Length: 397
Ligand SMILES: Cc1cc2nc3c(=O)[nH]c(=O)nc-3n(C[C@H](O)[C@H](O)[C@H](O)COP(=O)(O)O)c2cc1C
Image (cartoon, rainbow, N blue to C red):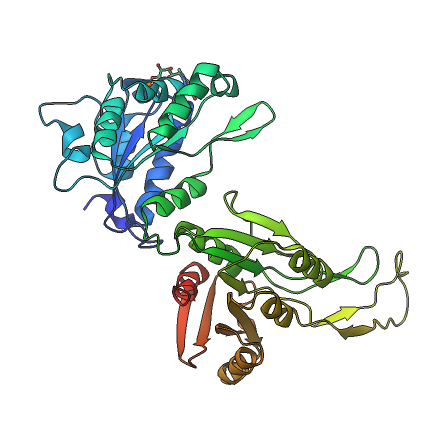
């Protein structure tokens, strides 16, 4: 077995049985394609590299053969590889991903010119209606060229998906590998949450004690980000309201930040969208400190902080969204209390499901959860938070 095959599916099965042709062209970003193809393989895909001659001057074909286990196609032969993979055949590939794509290659595709292995694969895939994703990579000056812009628009009109660069100042940065992989999964994955509007409320609150100190909790934000990412990959329109937490939110997730319970109430009040599903996995303060102005002086022998109960956010969410499916999280110290307390929360707030876990979930990559729905059916699942996010979202289909 080739070493690349050992990687297949070690992260997820989201691209299991999916065959992807990876077209690589002569951009310096071609050096990223070893990592990109291996990440696609980690999610279960089989990746077939196709290169332009210019690409082979940037990255050696041996590197892509090592990364994917398949010898890159650089020149077409009597095997008519473009037809075998992307033609009107019984078992064509699931996707042609051209990454990185030069100004030259995308302009040729826009005009139906095929004089390299990559452009011939593109012409064939377009004729066979095989999904195509192009990740353009070039200096901002090339990206801004009028003709290149027109050619990008032409390609989009031909139903080609573009993963546009993130433009900062005078730099056009290709999306990260994680973002490309998430968008590939969204395009050819199971797509069972397409057209769903999903709001995830995650992270922790941070309540001020004085003007510089806060009272917060150990929420890592991992579950919220995993839920947002999983829903995105399955085709949903996702919005994440994100509090105080360390986990980095991927660029492709739309985020609104909050810090305090008051901020969260403001977000709710100003919200104009109707969500099909709202998942509240945030660690929201139960008690709010009375804020002192300025800085409480250090060096005191004793300091009392006055706390008062916080408003119950979940009740307000249910009241403001009577038709949405709402899933809340409940955390308890003891496992034996999970089901009882989850059920209480579910009934009291007319929720659709409650996910209960113990305090050991805070800050860790793995968790054990109990999901109970309104028919009082419950299941227990254990594993990495990314995987558990998938089970939680299965309950709302
Ligand atoms: C080191 C190096 C880096 C390059 N980077 C880019 C790039 O990022 N984007 C681009 O459009 N062209 C880039 N070029 C120019 C292309 O390689 C050139 O236009 C070539 O003809 C593209 O051929 P292809 O589209 O068939 O791969 C680069 C060239 C070199 C030598």
